Each structure stands twice: as structure tokens, then as C-alpha cells.
Amino acid sequence: MTGFFTAPRIATGPGAIEQLSALGAQRAVIIVDPLLHRGDRHRRLVEELAKTETSVEVLAGDPGEPTIASVEALAARLRAFHPEWIVALGGGRTIDAAKGAWVRYACPESPLDTITPLVELQLRSSAGFVAVPTTSGSGCEASWNAMVRGDGGRPVELASRELVPDWALLDPSLPASMPPGLTAETGAELVAHAFEAAISEWSNPLSDAFARDAILSAFTELPKAVKHPDDLEARSALHHAATMAGIAASNSQFGAAHALAVALTVEDGPPYGRIIGTLLPYVAEFNYPSARDKYSALGGVFGASAVRDRSGVAERLRLLWSQVGIPRTLADAGVSEPGDREALAAVVQRARASTSSVANPRVPSETEFAELLGAAYRGSPVTF
Image 1 (cartoon, rainbow, N blue to C red):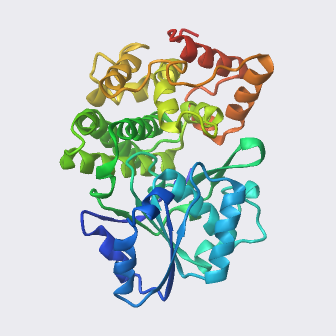
Image 2 (cartoon, one colour; image 1 turned 180 degrees about the vertical axis):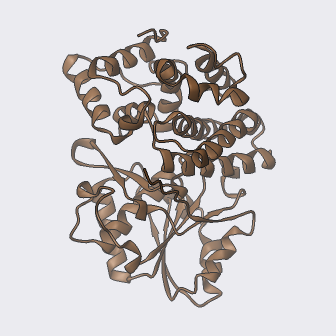
């Protein structure tokens, strides 16, 4: 089988944003997280683009998760301005919204829910894309995925290798103002993405290297960054680890924890990072019988004794979560338990529909997905 390794060009360090002046753009749009827009945090990007007399329009994204409607509105603004470059400044939601708008700008005839890895988009015939992450979690600045919400809040996952940004600009000073809770939740997100990449059926030696290093960095630096928010070395390490996790997952795929977390994430509910972090130990226990060799390869990260039995890695993850405030159960995380069989079946069907389940070491059945959810709500060990 032929494999392909994809990653953006990456500029790192306090001067990373200076790469914008090297784009040589005549027209660029900056899509900014609305909170950052109010704080004028995009000013540095505008000034950098102005060095080459680029005409710039700044658009504030919508608060909350991107929806098909909000993405369509952004795409309409892009068509009106006709940029050569799209620059996304913000966390995962903002970058995902910008990716969705990029697709609709370049392919107005292709609805978002029809996009698959097999669809030729030719995005760069319309515009290039730069991601400037301000949180250290999703890794979407390095991935070929994006998620928006469709009718009724249903998740619409976009997947295309063309969605990998041309540039990821990693300035460690940008996430420095994140509060401890957000630092913990985005850190849990990066650990989950890296771990699922490492045990994926589609993993490869290149993705494994990025995944292991991302997990190790998070275990070392996340408690420091949560306890001491002004620790810039820890912040910098986490910022780079998030991108490494994004590269790893983009090249080997997510797994069942991601599928369940997406299925459970709702507007105005607990954030995805908290949910996937809470779920991860239970999914780690579930996958162990089918991925012993992959777990063994992570002995240098979790400890040799932790990867010898089913509960070892799960407890090591829970120990990290206890240090940074990630809940042990979905109930403690604030996730409402499905009230009846029909509601539970709807969550399970959303998880089963996710392409992330395909590369999981054990592809859960509907019954197993439901049992995983039950264990995660109760805090019970996974023995099935």
C-alpha cells in the first residue's frame, strides 16, 4: 500500500508571523476569533501584511462552533473581497470555520456535507491558507480535517488532504493568555489526538514519532502550564506539541474517543476537549486487547509497567487528568446522560457514522459504543 505524509510548512517562534510579509499577497482576508477581534489581537497580522502593501479585510468569526450557515456567510464575504490568501487567527473553531469558508469560496457548487477525501476541490486555484493558532490543542493548523454543525446540530466532518494549510505559524506568545481551565482542556485534546494516532490501525513510523513526542511533551509540560500560566517554556512546548499531534492524527486518523466526543458535543454544552479527555481512559481500556504491540511501543511515554495490562495506561492518563482538573466521568464533566433508549441510540449512531471509528484498533459495535458510554458515565472499568 502506498502511503502519503502531509504537513503544512511551519514557522515557529516569536517571529513566526513575519512569514506573512513573505506571501507577496495583493489581497488577504484575516478571519479572527470574535474575542480576539474585540481585543485587537489581529493587529500584528495586519501590520505584517501591510509591509508588502497587501489589501486586507478583517472578518470576525461567529462565537461558538461553526455551522453551515455561519460558514456560508463567511464564504459570501470572501467572494465579495476575492482574496488570494485566507489567514485564520484563533482556536480550533475559528480555523475550522475558515477552512469551511475556504471550501465554499473555491467550490460554490459543492455543499459542505458532500466533501470527502475523494472529491477534487482545487482550493489553491482560488486562495492559499495560513493558520495562526492561539490555543494549543486541536492541531487543526496541521490537519486535513474540519468540523461544522449542520441541521439540528448534527456534526459534519470535512476531510480532504487539500485542507492542510499552506502555512502554520506557531507563535508561543499567542496562547500565553489562556486561563488554566482552557489550557487543561486543550491539552487533553492534544493528548487524545496524539494517543489515538499512535494506536491507530493506519499509523506509520512518521506519524508515530510525532505522536509519541507530543504525548511526552504534554505529560511533562501540561501540569506546569496549568499551575503556572506564565511559564512560557511550558506554553511553547505545548504549542508545538499540539501541532505535532495534529500532524500525527492527520496522517494516521483519529479513533473511537474522537467519534464519541463529536457525537456528545453540543452547542452550549461542555467543550470537546473536556469530553474527549474524560472519554480517553475508557477507550484506552477498550482498545488494549487489540493493540498490545502499539501500547508496548508507548512504554517510554507511560512507563513499562503501565503498558503491560489493560488498566495501566488508563490510570496513567487519569493521574495526569487529576493534576490538571479533567473530570473522571462524563457526569462530572457536565455531559447530560441520554434520557432514554432513543436518545442513546442517536448518540451511538452519530459515533458509528464517524469515519474515525474505521481506523480504531477495535471497531466498536453499537452495543459496545453504548457500553463505553455507560462506563464513562458511571466511572466503571471497561472489561468487555
